Each structure stands twice: as C-alpha cells, then as structure tokens.
Length: 493
Image 1 (cartoon, one colour):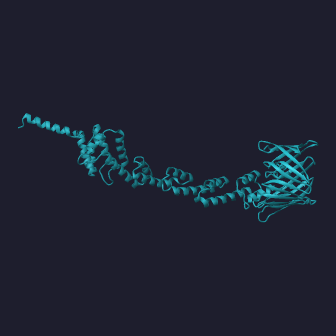
Image 2: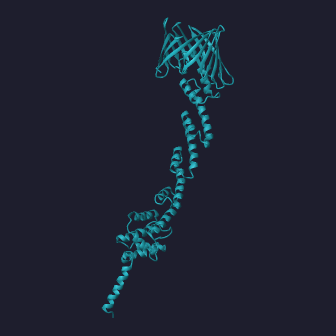
Image 3: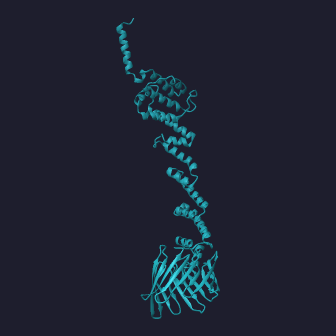
C-alpha cells in the first residue's frame, strides 16, 4: 500500500513531466491533432480526415493546426483519400496557409508542434508542399485561368513562375493575337514571351490586311509610314507602295480630278517619269491656258479655280475691267478683255494617258480648234497647234520639268521662254528679251526688258489675301508707277 508521502511524490513527478511537454500536448485537441498529422505524413488521408472531424471545439492555438491539416488534406495527392468528403483543391489549401502568414499568430507554436517525432514538418514545409501540388495541378490541367491564379501566389524567382508565364503566354497568344491591335497588346503584356516574334509577324500581316480591306490612300500611306524602315516588311511595303500608286492613279488620272488634289500629290510624292499622275499634272500646268502659266507668269493667277474679277487702272489712261473663269483644274474656260471689249471661251477634254488638253477657242463668234502632240516615250506634251495658225512647242528636263516654251504666231514670229524650277526666267522675241530677275514665291517682282542696248525695268508689288493669292499689284516702269491691278476671287480664296 502506498503511503501518502509516496503518492505525493508520484503526483509531483507527473506534474513536472507535464510541465516539460509543449503547450499543445497539454490539451485534448492537441493530442487529437498529433494523430491527424501522423496519419497525413503516412498519406492515410481517410484516417486523417476521420480524426480531424472529431475536433469540433478547437481553441485558438489548435485552429492553426486545423487550418494546416485541412490544407494538406485539400492538397492531397490525386487518387488518395477516396472517403474524404471534401474535394481536392490545392488552391484553397494555398489560401489557408497564406492566411496563417497574414494573421501572423500561432506560427511559432505550430512549428514546435509539427517538429515532433512522427510528424517532422513545419509551416514553411507545408506551404512548399502545397505550392508544389498547386503547380503540378496547374500544369496538368493546362488552363488559362489556373495559370493566371498560380502567378498570383508563387514568387517570381520560383522556376515555375517563368514556366507558367510562358505557358500562359502561349495560351493567351491564340486568344488575343487575332488582330493587329490584339497582337500589340499581347507584346505589351508579354515582352519576354518566345511568341513575341510570331506576334510581330502577325501584326505585320494583320496591318497589311487591314490596309487592303480599307483600300484607301490614307490606309496605304499609314502602313508604309509604319513599316517603311523595317527590313522584315520589305516585300509588304513594296507591294503597299504599288497598291498606293495604283489607287492614287485611279483617283487622280480622271476627268473629275481637281487641281488641289494634283497639287497635293505632286508636293508630297517623289517625282517620277513613269508615274502617270505626274504626266497628267505636268501636261496640265504647262498648258498656256492654265492659271499658273497665263500671261507668261508676269501677272499669274496662282492656280485659281474660280471666277476672278479684275480692274486695271492706268496712271495715264483709262480704267477697264476684265474677268476670268477657271475650272477645277485651273484651266481658263472664259475670259473677257475690257480693253478690247472681247470675250473668249475655251473647251477642253481629257485623255487617260496624257491628261487634259484644249479642244477649241471661240472669240467674237469665230471658233478655232487645237491639236496636241506628245512625246512617245514620256507621254509629255510636245506641241499644241491651233487652226488660227499659232503653235506652241515644249521642252522638258530629265525629271519632266519644263525648261523651254517656243510660241509661233500666225505670221511666223517666234517668242521663246526659258524656265528654271517651274518659273519663267527669260522670254525672247524678235525685238526684245524679257528677263525675270526676282520672284516672291511664284509672283514675278522684277523684270528687265532689253531692246538692243536699252534696258527698262518693270517692278511689281503685291498685296495678298489670307489664302496667299494676290489681290492687288502695282506695276512700275523704271521707278514710275504705270498701272494698278486689283482682283476679287469668287468664291473667296
């Protein structure tokens, strides 16, 4: 029989032993969780789940262990735990573990508990194990949303991160790179993807197809501007340029084309002898009845395409009024000379190879007809003959710019004009030579008239409207004002 003293000693030893056990081992819940974890590390998830369900009223410290055990059961290997009533869900398991870190409570005690014999785990080890299961499941299922979700929970320095991102890039490529903008967005979001080069190639393809579908001058110019300097687009750019030229030619080589459209094209494109637009343009502006060339450029009309009313007031003499009507191509269709009290009308036609050409001129009820000849090679205007006996012949440089115009009247008198950069420089007849010495844009401001040893100097001072067309010109001879011309454009320019 034990004495009271011996019983007291035994109880003291038991209490001392209990005091040395971890805090979890002192509770019934903790002892139950030891059995749960020992079943888990043996991959006996059925037993672990049965034991875990018996822990119904855990204290705060045991709750961390419950979350960890639940996470391991949720992330159990496939084909295990057939009687476990919760489905495998490594994503949910990862969430449980991450929440433990977020709360930051009970981790140290959990690690102390998990380090016991028969378990030999830690919170970090459990996280890595679940992370591996989550990674394995993600690559096995190979679904876009799972890859996206995985990338939110694993560290960027994890080798699986790059693998998952590359695989997501491959999956996303097919879904997003179905248009030029989609490919651009894809390359923006996945600059490191091995699919970037393919996305670039598809962007080029889609951009070309978009320009082809739109089929406008602006679309082809946009494509050429975007890809003109990129070697990989050399063939497409060359074809785009051919398409652009064909489209522009179709629009501009027509009787409906306007002078403005031709001017815009000529000013923004490289001059080419083979380009029919330039042939049409040059043949147009070099016609004597064109507003750029009228009156030998001394008092040109600057490409007018409307009615121009003109008043000429001589310092010593009379004042008279003229008017001129120009069509949309800048060709004179009707004019009235107030000094002679004479009206003249002109008719024109269009040839798809050569452009606009004069047909007839009617003055005082009498009509004269024109015939034009062209250079066989360049299709440019060679000469214009009129049944009134006059003839105008043209010469051009290798770029198609006019360099000389030779005009013969009905009596055989010849006046020859020379040009440089589109501006008349000299005009020589039987009795005198005119030298155009200075210009303000296309407006001649100083002209010398040489007759033998005598030289007279004409000067012109202009006033311009808001559209840079001159509306007033004051002409002086040897410093003395001779006449003033005022003009009104209708509609206003």
